[in-house]
Length: 223
Image (cartoon, rainbow, N blue to C red; front, side):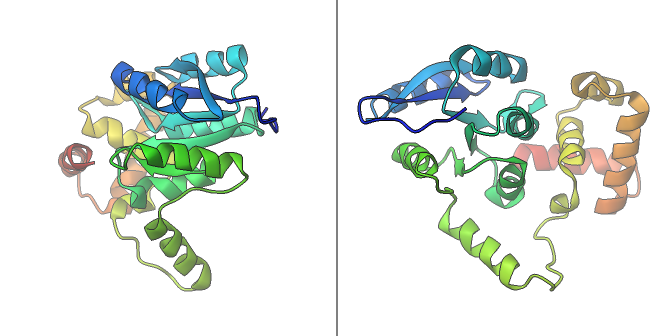
């Protein structure tokens, strides 16, 4: 969907974030940049997919936390259905847990919300020039993983052992949602969610559901 622009044409940017104030702030920031203009925004996954069809953006900025939904799942959907659409993941969460997941899902950049505002413009320019935008720290970490290919690298957190879907379930458990509600949010059967929970227990060495819940709540509050 993305295309090369001439000097007089601006790249169209779509913003996906569940906080209206954040969307408004990003819109003001981006519209001040030469070469970029916000064409629309969305607060959840269905709105985002509709906006992509309506506005035909060149680049989309996706917050990876969209209420009870996962921005990583949206990135995967966009990559599958709109392979030419550039994606920049924006998050308040630690890049050590999420950045690599976002890049594997199809994003071409990851930026923390704690970064200075000008970093967003820098990231968009890098991506639209065909590059990948990540922090120096993350770049070093990925390079070390590449160099040490066959070595087994211990995860910095047990959460890194979880698949994207398991992480999504873990987050919702941490937000206090019961199994049936999680199933409704993720459009899954209760049995499937229970299976994911069992996998999480095994991977993170939890003896019972209570320990899983306590750790999930603590982790969610700290990320």
